[in-house]
Amino acid sequence: MPLEEIEIHLLLEGIYRYYGLDFRNYALASLKRRIWKTIHAENLTTISGLQEKVLHDQECMERFLLNLSVHVTSMFRDASFYLAFRKTVIPLLKTYPFIRIWHAGCSTGEEVYSMAILLQEEGLYHRSRLYATDMNEMVLRKAKDGIFPLELMQKYTHNYLQAGGTTYFSEYYTAAYDSAIFRSSLKENIVFSPHNLVTDSSFNEFNVILCRNVLIYFDKTLQQRVHHLLYESLIRFGILGLGRQETLKFTPYEKQYEPLDAREKLYRRIS
Image (tube, rainbow, N blue to C red; front, side, top):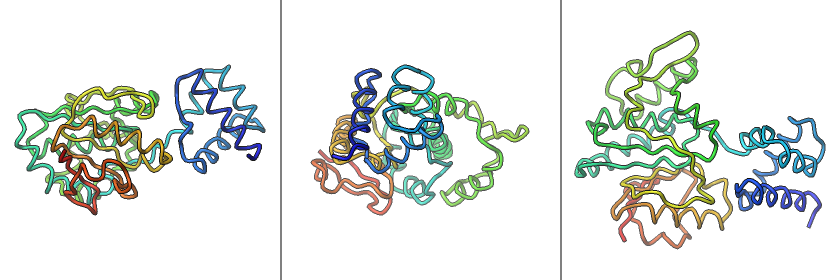
């Protein structure tokens, strides 16, 4: 085994044993890039040097965690997904007296607020509870604030309209200097909480679970573990939403779901 890989294994094992955070089954290529990004940012030269620093310096560990987590997101990201959700999932949700939705790996919260807006427009927000979780508490704090760069609103407005938005997107936020502050009413039924998909267990039963663009950063072993968690957390006939590059194929749970919209990776648990 190359020395670099030995150092990576030792680094991840140390983090797991000391902090309880398990990155040992993340995809190696993506891990390498993020590890070296942190090494350079910390003015270090080796992976072993990073291991020593993260185990002895809590702030360095938090910076490393921020680099290790992937936070590529936007409001109404992949607008066609939200359009399909309106058309195929909303009619099913309207049959429930109360709706629980889990955004697993919510990052800075843009997609959670997108769902809150969609549910409000469909008359369902008042009987919904959205659980927004991420392993990184720094990004969770940002998500809870609901404040995003004003310069992104033009792009987000376009996404919103493509997703079937029914009003003016600007009605959902207030512009203040260079920020867009989203209406506090959108947060009333959102619970922000830390949760690690790798090490934590199920904490409720859900009508909908959205775990989009998270699994692509895990290896096969870890993907199977997370699929088990998601399956166990869904009620029967509950809805699972994955990212465009993610799939249920070749997992033990492939036969336990039926596609509602195969292109948009929307599935319903059937057993």
